[in-house]
Length: 102
Image (cartoon, rainbow, N blue to C red):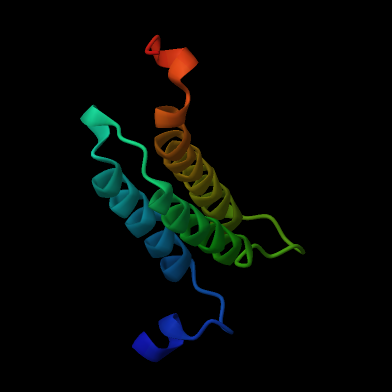
């Protein structure tokens, strides 16, 4: 079972969700959120989250519609939200006009 999850040739919903959530947690810790500081290394978790989203997208079956497909769509929405939050943590410290600082 473990080797099947780690094999990138097989479709794995667990692997995709784990990549996205782990990259979001790492980005949150790396940014030090309440005291946002500019950190260009946040691009690494953003790329990993995009790879995890692509892995989740691979699990969609195009022929039929069922509750499994609906669950995958919810996972894709969660992935999209995580990517947006990671990009926010990456780009917000560089937007000084938005914070009112000079």
